[in-house]
Length: 425
Image (cartoon, rainbow, N blue to C red; front, side):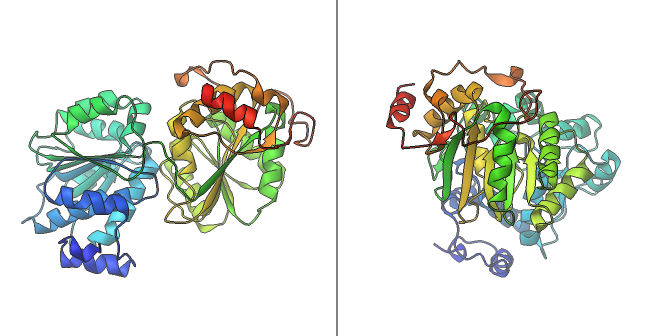
């Protein structure tokens, strides 16, 4: 199937050709026809498979066919995203496709002047991309109304649930007419997803191109069992093996991200930290420097897990393993994008064994072991769930020490015994 077989507006087909896009990805090929038929859609696909175009193209097609301009302070389409980065990414992907059609696209997120956003909404917009918190603020200030909203998109809906946006989403739903078309897209299917689907969707079509929780096929994965106090030194050694390639490093906390970045800078790997305590300008500068290759290392919390779409990211390092296994899938989805290959490395300390077991259970397999340790076969202490687990990303109070070649961390010989235990657990 080619895009020109989907019945899209000629101007959209021209824009796709200019962008070098001729053939839709699997999620696009499955979802677009249902959206163009007016059906509500629940789309499940791996990160980096083109979900934005899957919902964006048919919505742009419908907006082009509409007569007149949107009324002041209204939005014909509302796209909700969990983070500022993802909201900006969605708008950046849609603007080139909307070029020439005179469609207005606006973004409202926290960290940016609210007065400027209010001014942009005064004229009305065809597409409003927003994070839930800032949108509620604008709704309460009556700076925007959703009474004319025809299309609602929930992108990365499971992360919005994980980030505690469920109450905000319910409040926003009350502002939108029931007569609308709703599209929900996500990379995983969490336990709460059925609840949100029942709240927002009407008899939806479910399209799925990969089992929920399955990472991209071209991402190779491995785990390295490293004592907590030796993690930073080991990470620096890994970065030294590919100094000219971009690496995204995930830490658990904001302060841990800053501390780790300072340690890596002293080790000769300058980069930037990206987390919620950074201003929007700081975050934008960090992402731009990483995207252009000015810096090769970006240390981030999960605020960036779904907001970075940089195909040139070759490596993802899980310096701190996430306590939610689905988050691991989103993290490593930052590499191997747009059909490219990538590598994901999990650096696991003894107190993270339970997290590793949960990740392997979600994946349905054990991760190949690159660096082994005697304690890796120990029964893991049950991992605490939720945000109550607060551990710094830089390890203990002392300086990083030890070498990966010590007796606690030796090369793997395949470790079938651990694989069997992981399956049983």
